[in-house]
Length: 235
Image (cartoon, rainbow, N blue to C red):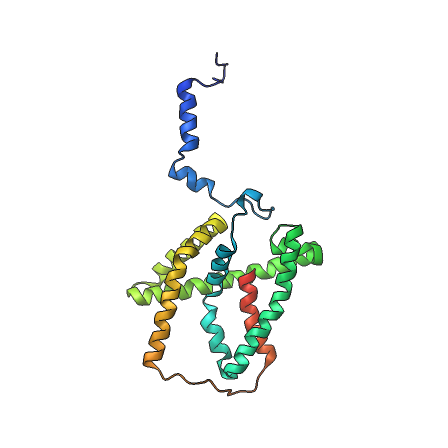
């Protein structure tokens, strides 16, 4: 017999509970997918990212608004120096990224939390504050460039696309890596097509030539410019 609270449930109620568990509504599914792990270690059950999925995620993250901007800022150093600066900055940036990755094997946390082992709470807080400001600018830059491109293609309001693009980015972040990976998986093809179309346009409308160096090479400026982009992406 059920107690005063109605437990155990009647057969009809039990079937209803089972149906809800086995066939959750769209609202329940969306609610369950919201990222709530925060800075805690990612549970084993959620560590389902394969190397192929991670490759697509980082590929899409690297193809950001600063990709053509980096080329523009380093163009006057000449192609050879530009490639050299990109490679050197990549190798320098790979060192802390590799160290964090190795730390992650022991403590599976985000980079800024793992940094407490090396820099302490105060040092990690300083980095966190710095990257908060940097990422706000990064978010705004990518949103505005994406909105400007879509507004130019559709001949519509840039403000409208700012809201759409920015809102989409916020939703994807709220739902975490699983949704980001799905989004990147299906939009990576669009990115490839867009870059291919841009390449074809450049080849057919402009005379391509080997960029020559027009100013003395400044390794500090070149490496800082490239490292800034890599730093924003990694964090």
